Structures are given as C-alpha cells and as structure tokens.
Length: 484
Ligand code: BES
Ligand code: MN
Ligand code: ZN
Image 1 (cartoon, rainbow, N blue to C red):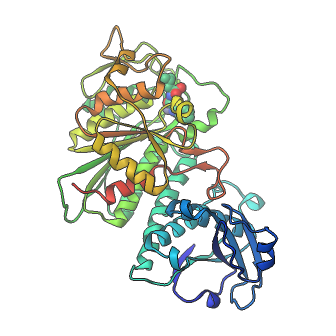
Image 2 (cartoon, protein in one colour):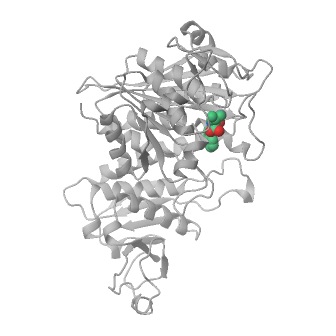
C-alpha cells in the first residue's frame, strides 16, 4: 500500500473514497447530507458509516462520513482505530485509492501518524495460506492523509506511522504462522534475515552453547521435542548514545505449547501456536528501532522452544539447574514459559542490560484476572513501571499494574529445590511473575503477561482476527523516548 500526505483542499483530491471523521453531535450539513443529519440517520457514534456517492463539487468518487464518537474522548488511539475500521469498511466495497482528511483542529503530526498506523494495521489480512477464491480479493493501492501543513513535518509523521505499523504487522504475521512452518530454527532464520536487512547485530545460541552456559531450565523444556531450541539475540546500537542505559527485551518464544507431559486438553489447543507472541513482538520492536534509530542501546533475547511430550521430555518432579545457579523443581511441565524466560533473563543481565522488559503469553490466570482488554504489568521498580505504563497509554495498548509483594513468595516453596515452577491455586499470574522476579534479581524490570491480549478470537472493526501485535508500539515508544 502506497502511503502519501497531501495538503491540497478536499475538493481537489481524486480518490475512490475520502474518509471524513465526524464527531458526535456535529450538525453541520456537508456533502449534501443535510437531510440525513436532520432525520437523525447520522449521529457520529463510533464506527457509524455513511457512504455518499458522487458528492457535488468534489473530485473523489465517494465520501465516507465516519463516526468518531465524543469529542472529549477522541485522541490518537481513537484516530488509529477509526482509520483502520474505515479502511476495512471501504476495502470491502472495492475502494482501491483511499484518502482521509484531518481538518483544522485534527491536523497534528501525532494524528497523521496514528491515521497511517490505523490504515496499515487495518489492511493486514492473515490469508497467506488461503488460495483462489478464499483469498481476500480486495486490495488497497494507496492511502493518503489530507492535512494542511502547520509547521510540523507531516511527511515524516506518516513515515513514522508506517514504520510502526509495518513492524507490528511483521509481528502479527509471525504469530499467525502455524507451528509446523515456524519452528525455533525458522524463527532464528527470520531473525537473521531481519538483522541482515535492517543492519542489526544477530547471534543465535544453539543447544551446545546453552549447555556450556548452564541453561538447564531452558534446555529442560526443549528436550521433549525433536526441534532443537534456539536463543536469538538481536542488538541495536546507536551511533551516539546519550546515556548509559542498555535496554534488554526478553520475549517468550514457545512455537507450540502442548503442555508437555502435563498435557493440555485438546479443545482450543490449536491456538497454542501463539505462545511465541512475546518473542515475535521483540522482533517487531527491533525492526522498528533499526529504522527509527533512537539514541539508546537495545538488545532482544528470544528463547525459542517447542513444548512437546516426546520420549525424552522432562517429567513432573524433575529438578533442573538454571543458569543463575538456582534449582527448580518442575511440578508442571505446562509452566514452561517461566523456565525458558528464567535463563534468558539471566543471560540478558550477563550481557550487560541495565533495564529489562519481558513479554510473554505466560498464564491463563491473567486472562481470568483482566480479560482480553488489558495486559498484566508486573514490575520490581516503580520508575520502570511508570515508563512502560505511560508509553502504553499513549499507544492505546492498555495495561494494568499487578502486585509483586514478597508475601506471594509463600506460594512458591519446594521441599526439594530452591523453587517450584508453579504456585498453588491462587494468584496464578502473580506467582508466575514472582518466579521471574527471582531471575531479574536487582535489575529494574517489567514483566508483561500478554496471554489475554496477543490474540483476537473475533477480530475488531479495525483489526483482523488472530495475532494483535501487542505490545510492539509500547516498547518502541519506550525505547524511542527514553531519557536517562
Ligand atoms: N502458554 C500458556 C499460557 C496461556 C494460556 C497462553 C492461555 C495463552 C492462553 C502457559 O505456558 C501455560 O500453560 N500456563 C499454565 C500455567 C499453569 C500450569 C501453572 C496455565 O496458565 O494454565
Ligand atoms: Mn504452558
Ligand atoms: Zn506456554
């Protein structure tokens, strides 16, 4: 899809359709829609569409009056959603060249960027493996943001929006891949290719190197599968760093989670291909950072394994020694994410990361606690927590702070090892995070449990079903706006 900005007046824009956002309560009759307004058929409610054909005095073939909701609620996040939903609506009507106008009060760089993001995100379809008539037939050729330049460089804002959304779509496409086609080795291959194309450093640790480093927790999970594990490390280094921060991004990369010997029920198991969404998010973040070039050092660490119940699989009761030296009693082989993340966190610390963020589809319990709308956020440091929360708020990737009081450690007691890999019945998302905290040690760290938010069962008006690409934008913003 071609992205452009245009500062000419609306009348002169040639397009199959121009999207015109309309706030609730707006009574101004335009494009000959006075009668519709008067009849109450246009209210401006979110995602209400009124498609006008051949509007008088306008070069475009159609105008789409797009309900934008209440003025006081309208922000960049709403703009992103509105652009995405409107594009998907017009795409289903075979419009190929689409424009969107941001009128006087709306035209800011942030809004231009958000509109482009919405369009690029809305355009993505997970139809790679559909053929013939099953494939999405309609294709959008161009998306143009019409806005009168007012000091800000809108071309640059649009470019930034495209970088962000394409990075997020890169993540979504990886997450939507099935586990037979995206093994740990294949993710490593994708990471190497990404690094080569974008000028990032890349190192993939194989089984032998992990053994030499003593990554017993990660290797214990991997041993049940015929697919060898991989620990992907990507590095972005600024030309001139402004501070001493080295941000480490750790993402869970379980290409398929059967549960292992503690096997999961068959119902819905096909969805466990998205258990690498945290890892895929970190690849997307690195892709965007390579293009945006912020002045902070960032490394990504993505432990990739397949959790299978093969004949060499680890058993409940096995005791493994993590790279940090801590021993873990594996009570439940389905609590595998925290085991691979434990070693990846330790490795990230050893590599000199001063701050850490991990993202993982870690627990069903977070879905019970927060549902599908907010990411569970855990932190051992208030400053880090606030940085991530603030970035997420602006990006419309909503999160919610969860507790990590020392009391919860009472739930993590093993008679035989330093730690069990699960707590009891209560606070499952918290005990999982408490387990990780043992390996983040004294490094400022945030853990994002994205089990409820990385996958959309039903899709949204502005996003296709399947992978959501959360929390790519938040983490790009965190790094890109970092101040020491
Ligand atoms: N990958 C799952 C968590 C998950 C659940 C992700 C639902 C997405 C949707 C994780 O590895 C897991 O199996 N967690 C267990 C932990 C339990 C054994 C303590 C869970 O949540 O049931
Ligand atoms: Mn599991
Ligand atoms: Zn898992």
